[in-house]
Length: 297
Image 1 (cartoon, one colour):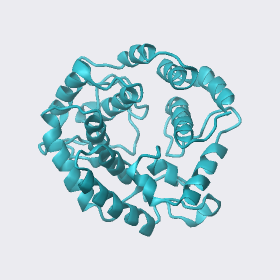
Image 2 (spheres, helix red, strand yellow):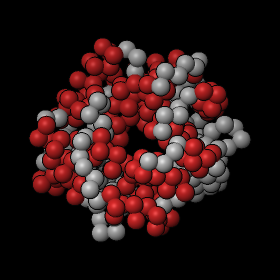
Image 3 (cartoon, one colour):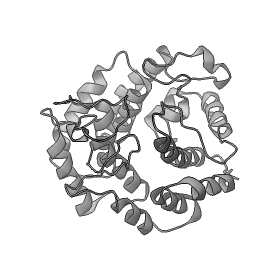
C-alpha cells in the first residue's frame, strides 16, 4: 500500500505534498515542509496561490490559511510569531461577528470552484471558522481574534439542527480543540445522535447506495465514520461502534486505486484541480489508516 502510494506521490504531487509525504512516511525533517509551504504565503500574512486547489489565483483566502495551519499542525510547527501573524490576518478578513467567511470577496476575478460562490459582504461560516479555532486552541495559541471567533463557533455548533457532513466535520474540528471540555462533550454527544438520526454517515459500506447524499454534493459523495473521526482521540469516535469503524477503515483501505492514489469524491470542475487534490487526499487517507492502527504494508 505505502510503496504504491509513494510512487503515486512522486509521479503526481506538488512539491508541498512530496515534502509532506516524506515527513509523515519516510522519516524526513519538518523544515522542507515549512520551506515548501512558505511559497504560498502572501504579503498580508495569509496564504494563497491555490494552496487549497479549488481556489485559484494569488490572493489570500481563509480556506488557504486554514489549509496552511493544518499542514503546520501536522508537523508540530503551529506556534510562535508566524501564527501570531496569521491571527492578525484572520482578524483583518473576519466578518463583523468576528468569524471567518467561506470566501473573501478578493477572490473575484480569479478562477474558483462553482460550488463556492463569491459574494460581497459574505456571512460568517462555520466550515471556515470551526477548524481554525479548534486547531489554534489545541495548539494553545492565545490571540484576541479567538475570543469572538470561539463565541461564534459555540453558538453555531449548538444551534445545528438539520446539517450535512462537511458542516459536522467543521463542528468536530472545533470541539476537538475547544477549551471547555465538558461543554464540548455535551455538544459532541448531541451531534453524534444527529449524525445517526439523519444518516449522515454510511455505517455499512456494503449498503452505501441506501444512504442519502446531501443536497449539492456530487453523486456518491458519501461520508463514513473515518471521515468524522480521523484519529481515535476525536470526540466523534464515540459515535460509532468498533465494528462500524473497522468496516469504515476497510472501505478506506480498499479505495486505493491502481495507480497508488486515492480518489476525490466531491465535484470536480477543472482537470488541474483534480490532479492537485488526489495527492492531498492520498496523504490524508494514509494518515487516517495509520492513526487507527492499520498497517500500511
